[in-house]
Image 1 (cartoon, one colour):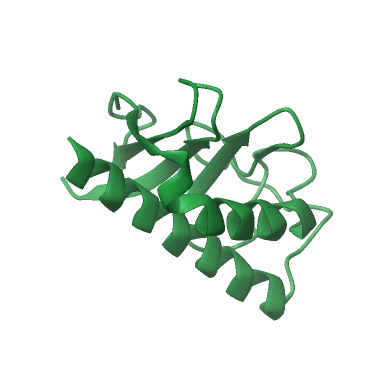
Image 2: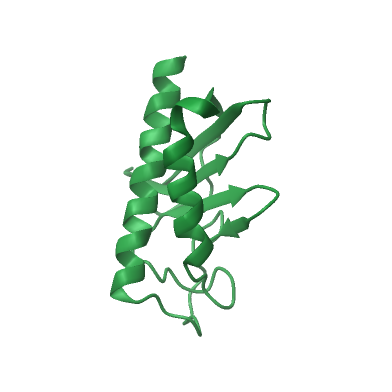
Length: 131
């Protein structure tokens, strides 16, 4: 089975004071279940610029309507962000269920989403090194 990245979680400094928690979960190809993923943390100060950039990207990116209907970014990856200022989640824990979204991402928005995925991966890599 091939592991397909599905959910990448980022929770800004609410998990522990002055930390960022990042958890990566994968879904084996052909299955609806995500692997369990324990959050990893890193100091917020060391990644503040990346977190701010990610927040600014997600704040302007559209979500599929209805939720979970279509992978409008075409990457089979979801990002979940939860903070006091923004709650954002594309797709669903079991992937998109089919159908067509009433909202479609533009090529520019798809590029911004790719950048958001790269930021989350960078934060996860940094958190792994902190262990």
